[in-house]
Amino acid sequence: FLAIVFVGGFGALMYENDERINNLISDFLDEKKLVCAICIAPRILINANVLENKKFTMWNQDESQNNFIKNSGGIFTGKNVESDDNIITANGPMSAKEFGEIIISKLKEF
Image (cartoon, rainbow, N blue to C red):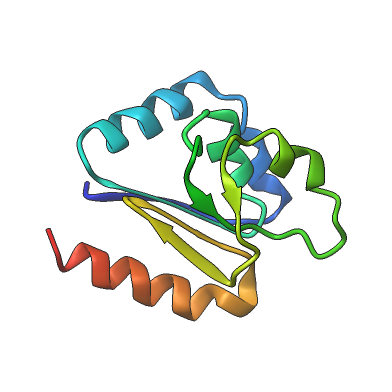
């Protein structure tokens, strides 16, 4: 696989403290593959400690994710979609089309 994509919805949070998922994310990044997350799913990346000094975005309309963002080690931009190296994040369903288009564009580079 060239990419892994974590979709949002609160069901995604079942993976945020999963060691197997954290290892998978690390492996993908080590192999220069894409790691993507939309809506609340960037919390998975935060807990995998892969956003250090990386630009990212995520759903935070009600500001309930402020503590996660603050402790992420990353640079929260608040944009609809953010791409930094091989990490692509988006803030929710309203950005899904753009998120998908950026993923496709990056996959064409492989």
